Amino acid sequence: MQRLRRLLRQRSVRRSDGAFVVEGTKVLEAALDAGAAIEAVYFAPEAHRQEAAARVLARLEAAGVRCFALRAGVIERVADTTSPQSLCGVVAALDRPAAALVASAEVLFVCVDVRDPGNLGAIMRSAAAAGVGGVICCEGSADPYNPKVVRASAGALFSVPIALGIGASEAFSTLRAAGFSVLGTLARGGEDYATATLSARLALVLGNEASGLPPELAGQLDGAVSIPMASATESLNVAMAATVLAFEIARRRRQEGATRPGAPSI
Image (tube, rainbow, N blue to C red; front, side, top):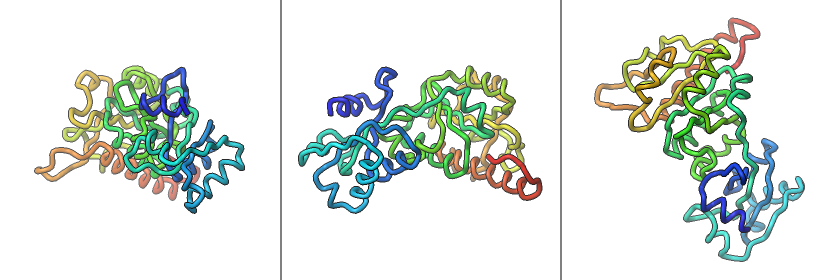
């Protein structure tokens, strides 16, 4: 219980801890489905009276996960949300070296200074839905283990490989050495995404919500793409832009697969 409290207070993973907190039946079920290493689960008295929570508890216990009953009112004091769910758990960290993602994926998102936890979680969710091969969270971006990121990802954190703690320049060098084309995303001034080349191994770089990509990174990109907008619109939300681009890439690769048997998936 003390470990749970400490992890919630720090809102992120320390390397010495190597674990993070998940809350709710859907996210815990996603962790189970993905075969994540769940260290322990804590549940409120009402959990056994809730169909979904009781089902997940039964799965957890069958999988040999340690499950601890809490007294009434305890989970409300330790949980991160104002209206907490009846289950929360401690799960081992999932991140992998950036080189591992680069070796196995065809398309990656690279987040540079994406600071809003809700945006980062939504980017992960879109990546999972569109089949993007992973998300690299460069230094300065939100911690993917922040409880708000975990919730916003709606379980996608367990299905999309992630890497973190790497500088943007180092990430670009690693990607380019592996044959990736590194494309920045700009609100305006980039090539129209509808006509841009989005084939081969591709890394889409997503910048800060307010200021976009740092100017000093421009010379390290292979190009940039933009999503045309009505003149009165300043910019798209970064997670929405990532979604549009990811599904455009997925659409094109489905078309390629229909005409070219054996074409790689996204």
